[in-house]
Image 1: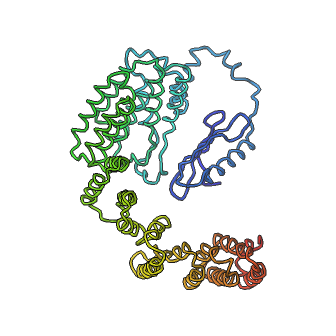
Image 2: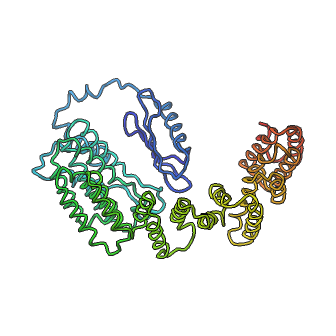
Length: 532
């Protein structure tokens, strides 16, 4: 396909390519096993499908390319040639070629950089800085890139560190991870645009490897802890993700290094946060509480929780604890304090708080409160769970009257803003109450292909002929107003539903015959109907 470009084999079993898609340029990577079967893949497109269609496109292109260009055994082996080349000649050749071939240069660095004598310095820092600065990243056309820009060279360094860990060379792997974290942060800082949301979070992968290195028991944990503490103060770590990674790693190391120092460092961070109800404060406090729980100090974690109910999630957790202890009065005070301070009175914004109030009302058997709160959940949008709770607060005699009030309320809501959102409230209610004839009449009055498809099962058993008529009218109208393969596939599905109803197959046959005459020029439609 001409949308595929820059297809190349990066390893014996790995390929990658670029694809010009509807939303930019995507990077596709595919790995095969020894038998040639696909075992791993990735694509940076925004598709929700897994795998996306681009994986198949690129795999087809790979197969075509390998079929056209099978490996040819060279009559003279490379090993044979090198036997007649001196070491100095070979070195001179490699140096010369590497000046014009960045892939060769990077391969040499990845394989042999660890051989350089370090004299206490991290030799990987200048190497990674250089490859990042030289990476072909086009800032002028930045917003034409795919959703997440990938740096193949950082992928390569990740694999190198993983290989060293597998070999037990933890110290060397640690140096690579540190260098990548430091230089990636510095590279991001040097960019002119706000690009962090469009770049792969490579730092998380290197920090994850540092966790593995720390847990090996083969490195100095105190040194690694001090590194995190010192490094995070650098200005280049301007993004919160880096700060969180450093502090989370410190929390992991602190129990074996210096737990008191870790808590002190978090308290110092918290003091710098002016808004103690902010997400930044929440992150720090949550980290401290998790640390206390992990180190068998639940009382200290509980104390922090109780002292910081200004944070919504913490307050809800405290409320739930009060409810468990049947301290309903205290729980309601906390809830109402939050609702009174909330800048948004929208019901759905405060949904979780209303659920807690409903739980308390049910526990206290406060029927008026249960009724009032449950109705708030169904006032603008039908919900079967809360509808049942609301219904159970009425006697059978009173409910018949109340049901009509709710239907009237929903009818009035249809004329207000968001009417399309509330259109099916009455249908849902009638289905829940098993009022089949009223539901059938309602669907007839608001007939659409979607509505008859959704609700026909509720009344088809007792009203099969009327249901078939509604299906036919809805499909005829839908077919007249819509075109395209997706439309025809949907019509096909609806016709199949009709065939499952007694006498439906004959009506469907008549409808298809009519369509073949009326829409004879719709070739895609004729093809889809041919599958019935």
